[in-house]
Image 1 (cartoon, helix red, strand yellow):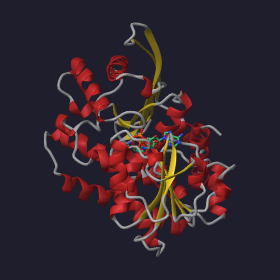
Image 2 (spheres, protein in one colour):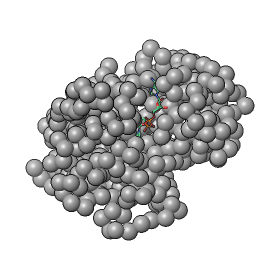
Image 3 (cartoon, helix red, strand yellow):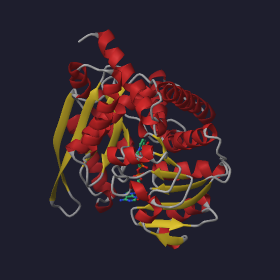
Amino acid sequence: MSDYETAVRFFEQSADVMDLSQNMRKLLLTPEREVKVQVAMEMDNGEIGTFIGFRMQHNSARGPMKGGLRYHHEVDAQEVLALATLMTWKTAVVNIPYGGAKGGIAVKVKDLSPGENERLTRKFTDVLQDVIGPDKDIPAPDMGTNAQVMAWIENQYEKYHGFNPACVTGKPVELHGAEGREEATGRGVATLTMAMLEKCKHNVKGATIAIQGFGNVGSFAARFLHDAGCKVISISDVTGGIRDADGLDIPKLQEHVAENKPIAEFAEAISNEELLALDVDVLMPAALGGVLTGDNANDVRAKFIVEAANNPTDPAADEIFQKRDILVLPDILANAGGVTVSYFEWVQNRQYFHWELDRTRLELDKIMLGSFHKVWEIAERRKVTLRLASYLLGIGRVGRATVLGGI
Ligand code: NAD
């Protein structure tokens, strides 16, 4: 099942419970604008490189559209649209005044030199600059992009529109970025993992965790959980995984990875498939979508799944987890910390005001925990999964804003 089919299936399941009319379903699912562009540039060797870029603007009923920019060779229109749809529900679940969008370029970032990456980003901004902006659609980092890429976008956008730092978030702190943005998604994921364990009367200290992906989200989530006394016993990245039953030393692993050393040299090597089937308390996919499917869901031995990545579980796997009483903390709630601090960054940029890290963390924890408890309450009251409860909350808010605003 494709990412988009997964996103639609989860939407339809919630729409059935909400008894939404077919017209309303069509309105809420149809993207407001789909942009597909050629991004052509000169490569370092003098040849012409031609890439395809996307920006899918799904819904703006609750405010300007917001969503990450992914550089990955598997990026395609359907995947980006699925992720844009998730952003609409996600911003509504945490109740920040945004709609949903997503973008990406089909490219292997590892094959680009820093100069090529910069030219690609500036070219992409050239072709997108009239449809994005602080009151229209605000990009942010996602897989394969980072603060440096956001800095190039800001600089290029400002060549057309003048000083405008709120046009993009996830920027370097030295260039109008927010303190705490880089760690925000991982922090939010870790905070809600602990909140969920506590709700289920499971010890946080000593809880065993396996995390697929050790990039921005996976590494910060691992670090916060490690610092809180959890045992992160397995980690993986695109090259494979490692395991240590006594718990990996995450700060040391971060140093190891920062020195560009392969993670397989750090501890006993295992495969990504083995990681998904480890006997742990919490399994946390924090890399690609579509990794938990009907084919491998029965191999999962974790008691809890925390969706740090977007769209990691397909509906067949979701059904199996429900039957097996494995509690799933869904992506549109679990990883909303990133967009929440992006919102704080946008607010600070518009007010020309700078928050200290403590304030960011305090406000982030308040929004994440408040949303978690709201979703938990809906799940208990309506006797539905946390995913369905999150969708009911998110779709309900978007639907009400649409009706109130009128068409
Ligand atoms: P990233 O590029 O920083 O890191 C991705 C990690 O996944 C890397 O460690 C990479 O080696 C690993 N990986 C890639 N392919 C893999 C594979 N086939 N098997 C195992 N590992 C693989 O990306 P990120 O920003 O950490 O994003 C990770 C996930 O979190 C994505 O699904 C993204 O959409 C989601 N997300 C990110 C943010 C954010 O603020 N960055 C916010 C919300 C959701």
